[in-house]
Amino acid sequence: MKDGFVTVAAATPKVQVADCAYNARQTIALLREAARRGVKAICFPELGLTGYTCADLFLQPVLLDGAVRALEQVVEATRGLNLLAVVGLPLRFPERNALYNCAAVLCNGEILGIVPKVNIPNYTEFYEGRWFTSGRELSLTATLCGQEVPVDARQIFRCRELPELCVGVELCEDLWVPAPPSNDLCAAGATVILNPSASDEIVCKDAYRRSLVVCQSGRLVCGYVYADAGEGESSTDLVYAGHDLIAENGSLLAERRFATGLTVSEIDVHKLAFERRRMSTYPPDGESCVEEVPFSLTLEQTELTRHVAPNPFVPADLGDRAARCQEIFTLASWGLRKRLEHTHAKTAVIGLSGGLDSTLALLITANAMQLLGRPNTDILCVTMPCFGTTDRTRDNATQLARCLGTSFRRVDIGESVMRHFADIGHDPEDRSVTYENCQARERTQVLMDLANQSGGLVIGTGDLSEMALGWSTYNGDHMSMYAVNCSIPKTLVRHLTRWVSDQSREADPALSAVLDDILATPVSPELLPAVDGKISQETESLVGPYELHDFFLYYSVRFGFPPKKVYRLARYAFRGSYDGETILKWEKNFYHRFFAQQFKRSCIPDGPKVGSVTLSPRGDWRMPSDAVAALWKAELEEL
Image (cartoon, rainbow, N blue to C red; front, side, top):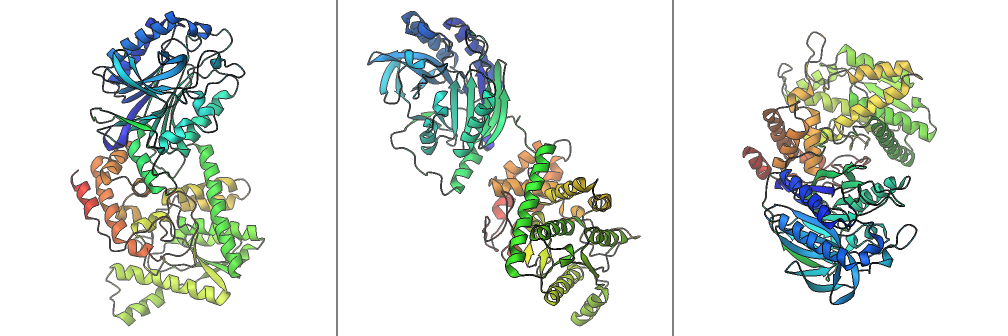
């Protein structure tokens, strides 16, 4: 539960219809297994203590009394277990001459509350209206298993030790209606919804059920645990497959079907709380009639089993990755298309280095020109070799421009930079930052002036990762007239370029070949002299691996995770690739640079947002340039 991770489970025990004692034993066995596995919130199926398919037996007092005795056994079994459990059973109350389909919320030998089902289906294969009454208006205190228990559909259950863990309950059909009870429960503060369900299987229903659970978790910014009835339910007319689902904020974390037992994952309630604070449209207060019931759990370290992607900006599935690349490529191209059209730019001017970023910027620009119905000769590619330029990158830049049919110019800036050194009194043997930045600013000056000459726009090539680290020269490559890569991180730049190469492999093998060689070239600004004709200045050896920095960026900015939690997730995601000492070293560097370089991000060019993380001061990220990183650094020093 530390760092906000709560282990949850959807449990589908094997049942015997109307055999309450047997069903109680199966439930207790899974409860104990869940406790051993560190589960803190577990949900069992709808009417699980009797079986959902008892039909007219629900009207028999023998069955109803047996269900209460089974509940007593389960309640007692939770004593000493460090978890909250929801089990389903039919209940009648002396105050009402009706039968209700209920969920009992249990913790450490106590019944915290009874939640009745609100929406009673009575259509097609469902006949619940024959036996059960809606609990929409039911609100009372009942004596059950020797305890005084609140009975109400409008209850939420909050953990004292981890207030962000606040549980709401709705039952099966309640999710399938236009206005599910979980809407109000989450508006009132619930971060996790447990749904005891008995949803039968017909062809394709599983896909719709999955979409319901996942989408509801996204709409409500919550965790959603759906426990379905399965093996042992009557197959007289229907089949029950135990389709258990766990989702979090629009993402499916775990799923099982045609199986009994536990489906387990971890829900990050701290992340959910951050998302709700961030969203100004999320209701700050819920329905005043929702009652909050406290409960206690012992805080323990949660063992992670959920997938944490080491490259969160890049889909792991190749099909998803191709679709994502297509979407990003199109968005960036349409953004540039609009800017070129609005400014009546005659040309698009790009400094082409033979590296990844300028390559992607050129590919996007060529696509924008195609969208405008204009020839690629309206793109002016400029290569500007200087002291660190290698034959490999220069030749790749030349070949790339030739393959795409752009206009092309070579401007050697070495002499101009040497003259500038003389003007400012800088010794060329002094290879300090001045030596490097003079070259970067000279290149930007050349591009800006060529744009003036040709009536064009300078297209920026810097990516999101470089912006986060401040890995650019202020008023050098930091500046342009429209920055197409500004919200594309370095890890994704590589995949986008590879995607274009793969797309071109048959139709244009020459283009694909040069793109492949660019992908194989070390990332470098090439501002220091080459050694034996090879790149001497590799960016990742200086600032750290971009896959680590992109990971730090995603979780610290997108979800506001503190440094210790980012470190823990990085250790988990990169296990086998980087040790803890290496991760900590570069995470410290990330926070140092991220804070120190904000002044560059405060005045960046326009550019399109294409993903969920961007650092534009006009968009998602507003930060004072003189903010101090002391708190973030201190937390890492504690490690």
